[in-house]
Every structure is written in C-alpha cells, then in structure tokens.
Length: 171
Image 1 (cartoon, rainbow, N blue to C red):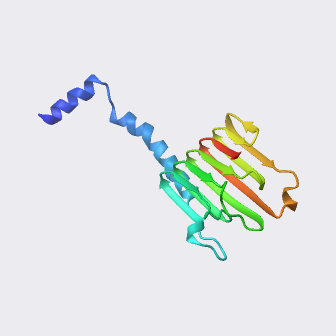
Image 2: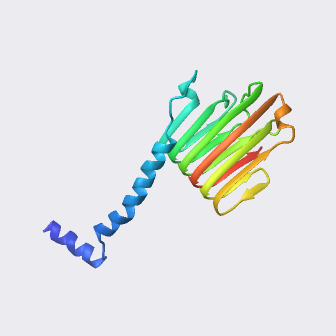
Image 3: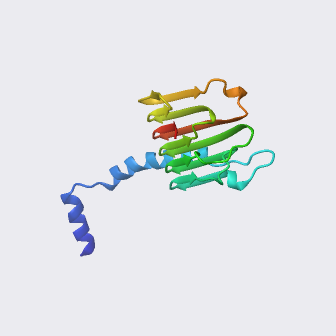
C-alpha cells in the first residue's frame, strides 16, 4: 500500500529516477575528480601538518596574530577559503601561500604595508586582485607590487578555483 502511494505521487509530479541519476552522476564524478586532484600530497623535505589544511566539504577560515602564512597550503573540495592575513606574522624574505578550492570562493586579505605578488585562476568565476578584475569564464590574473623582489618581507599568493570567485584585497 505504501509503495503504491509513492508510485502515484511520482506519476503526478512526473519524476524519473533515471533522469535524476543521469544528471547527478556526471556532477558526482567531476566532484570526485576535483577532490583527487586537489588532495594534499606528501612534499619532499621538511613540512608540518599544520601548514597543509584539506577539507573535502566545508569552509576554511583563518586569521589572527599567531597565523604564520609562509608555506601554508589550504585546499577545499566544496567550500570557501577565507584568509585574513592583516595581523599575521611574516618571516623575512619571501613568504608563499596557496589557496585552492574546487567548488567555492577564495578570499585573501593582505596587509597594506607588505609587498605582494598574487595570481588567481578561476574556470567559472571572477578574479579580482586589488584594483584589477577579470570576469567571465576561464580567467587568470596576476599582479605584483613595484619592487616586490627587493623588499625584505614579501608575500606571494597563489589562488585557484574551478567554480567560484577569487578576491585578493588589502585591508
């Protein structure tokens, strides 16, 4: 009796499980593929687990005075990456940061007084680095402060997403 009732409901709303699976299966395969591509990999040399953050599902938000962004690699499969580096500690020389997501946005706030070189890539989304913006599909944008290489403290930011926007701004 319950099965008959469900069958009648699906007939009324014209729902076909075959079509639903045909639509969801490719999206699921793409998500699994992106997770495999974006997963953290062992690095040669010395590295700390705290420098490599991976989340399959969910946002990553980092900020504060105790944050050391040098060598930080943040990756999400489905979720946003939000990094507020305005109060972070930076080592002398070049500091390098990676922020990647498959489905979600990347937002990185950097201090006013630090030399920055940044690049961002988004397959389906906008990329904004300071006052430069690329809109639409298949965007890549790079920007560097003048004399970046000669500054005693500097930050190089690499950001990427498949489906989402990238914003790198000064605060």
